[in-house]
Image (spheres, rainbow over the protein chains, first blue to last red):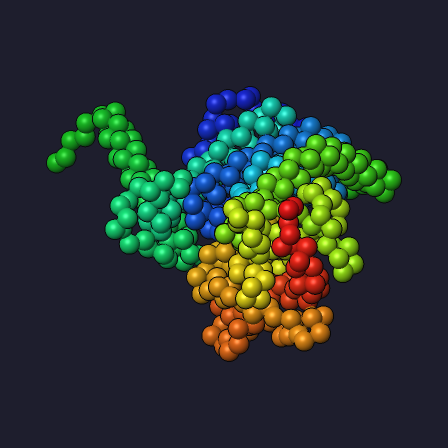
Amino acid sequence: MTQANKKETPLTLDVFTAGIWKENPVFVMMLGLCPVLAVTNSVLNSLAMGIASIFVLVCSNALVSALRNFIPKQVRITTYIIIIATFVTLVDYIIQAVSLDLYNRLGAFIQLIVVNCLILGRAEAYASKNSFTKSVVSALGMGLGFTLALVMLGGVRELLGAGQLLGYQVFSTQFEPWVVMILPPGGFIVLGCWLLLINYLEQRKTSKLILRDKAASHDQLPSESFS
Amino acid sequence: MSTPENQVPELPSSTKLIMTLATVAMISGLLVVMVYEFTKPIIAENQRLATERAIFKVLPLAKKRLTYVVDQDKLVLADDKTVGELIYAGYDKHNNLVGVAINAAAQGYQDIVKILYGYNQDNSCIIGFDVLKSTETPGFGTKITTDEGFLANFKCLDAQLNVPQSALANAITTVRHGTKKHAWQIDAISGSTITSNAVGRMLNKSAQKLLPVVVKNLNLLKQGQQ
């Protein structure tokens, strides 16, 4: 029997925006960390990987959603992998056609988009259970969130590791680059710092909301007398 | 009495499963072939431009160049679209031969790595290389183009021929980092030995086969289009 058609919730703006920040695939769901750490040694590489991932995510989710009523549950994972691998192959050819230099810089990580758990995870958890439009919108949001995370890491690493952004010199030539930032340990350090900052801000926001709710419920209570 | 929850779901037939996989595979194949055919000429043009840039990078003294194709042990003047083993001769503004650029390829860590290397006939040295195609791991295999120690190997990598001029006098080999003793050895990059070894293997294979042909046809190369 194919995936059951459950009653779907309507398409809202939240379907798109959730993937950008609230359910960010890198900072919240911690998915696809291998390419995140490997190619974020410059903003250009980060952008390119992000755009390639958006393309694969949107197209594969669209096709999975379009075929969701025809794919038997027993072969769904195999089918999803065929679909994802197809679009990764297309991206591989397209990047070679756009820029061989960029293709050489990204190396093996283009083909490794196939095993990015974000893409297979969204196909299984979302696209196979939701309409075509919702799946595409959600995939777009997730892809943008993934790209945002890549660029956030790439920006810090390129700035501190080479004194540049997008190849343009930002710091003076007297700046001594922190070479560790463009090496793998730098990737872990920068990711850890971003996670620390984001979790701290989320905790502060949650604490403020709790305090506000407490204050609001306290105001509503009838006054008590203490003897 | 059986309830709906206790009923075993009906499994689809094997035929349906196979048909689903076959249909999806067919759609995938069609998409891949369409995009491949569309991008093939664009990629070929990109590779031609990359080769052009690489030729003048590995022969920095060259101002113009000619293409030759290898025909057994002879070189024949050709163009970039000629099918076969191509060799590019570089000339300065006085039409003096400054060197030749030759293709080489070998299996790296991930996939085939393709390079173009420059050979100077006056000192029988390989004087540099440029990567044409590589999918090596960023930060590891890609170091072959940025690591200063590795690039120093190619200031003058010995590629002298033996006495009969039928092969290299000494095979080009990649040795462990820090153990280079001879001018025909390549000091590997620590942490990128597979890609470093690939560079050594491809240079040796190409040089053993083509440098005797280049040396044998030096007079033709020096003439150029005069």
